[in-house]
Length: 152
Image (tube, rainbow, N blue to C red; front, side):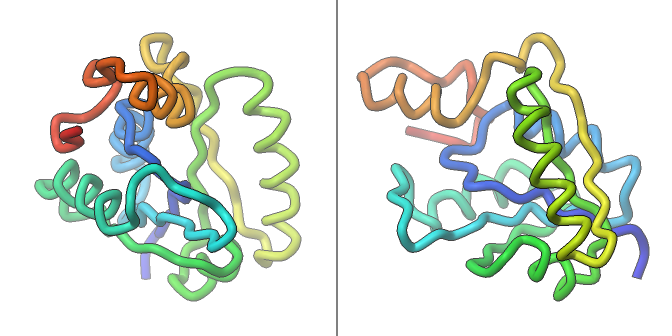
């Protein structure tokens, strides 16, 4: 089975900050599942198929990365995948406060599901998918925040 970690998110779109977190997690885990959470009540700028494609293309040379999607609870998805770890990136103290609460809940409902936090490097700490979406919606060029596979 090995050490399996899940990196959940909407990845709407995938950013260089996400890529950094995955690359830093790879030496620690035998397998990293990048899992796109699908919420039917949420409106996405990019389709699920597009987001899956971008992630698959970005990590096509990395055999330890698997890309999936799910619509149930993250803790239940982790159980189904035999993953004992969640990966989360932290950009600032606001992220920490939010993620701390979620990680504590996941530990309870996920039977000791452990969350591993990675602090973003300074050059990626200002990047968020929501900020990138606003740049795109405003007609700006967001290429400097996106991996090469994300072509807009």
